[in-house]
Image (tube, rainbow, N blue to C red; front, side, top):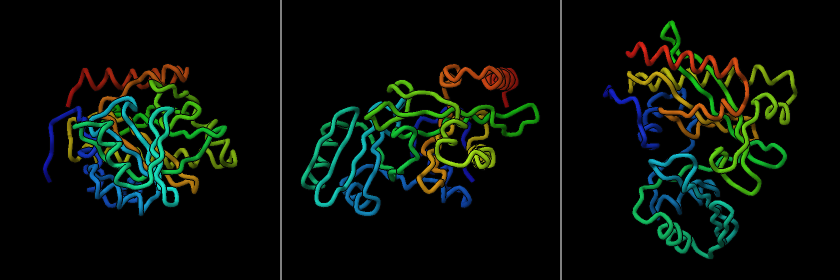
Length: 252
């Protein structure tokens, strides 16, 4: 198996391909392809909703959502919305917006909602003192009203994961469900390290569908800790800082 010594990987496609090499993770990875007229048409026919993302994008900038609604197509970016009568017209509009920047298309997930707003989770997983992958933090990110992205830089709100799950399930199920997310995230760490052995931390973005299935939207190799500062959980934040210092002082 080919391995990489990089600690920062910007390409979303490269990171997705790394996860797809593990058959146990495959069911949790939304279909992700390079953007083209062919993939746009095919994936809208198959999934009805897709997200268009810059392959090397950051902070939710440039993300769009396309939906097929009957015989028409809807494109949303930020607070703007456009309607098209053909997939070709939709494609041309996207092309004008992105110019020559490389984009991908990802299957859209109809996520759980909090007061009518979509949310997802950023889970921090880091190598600990025993050189094992440890979940050091989790924060819920709720989209600003009428927006399609949850990033704080795009107006998203950081809330405790427990609060968001309690609004969608029985309280007795919250802790076991969180444990299942943590187990999935640790498996992602192990898989990612098998290909990129010098990576010691990941920020994993997970959305939960309305049928309660977790979907891995993205893996970040240089995750920001700002959302955890905003959350105000000092114990969680201190553990992230502790493991960050440990790994920087003892590189692999």
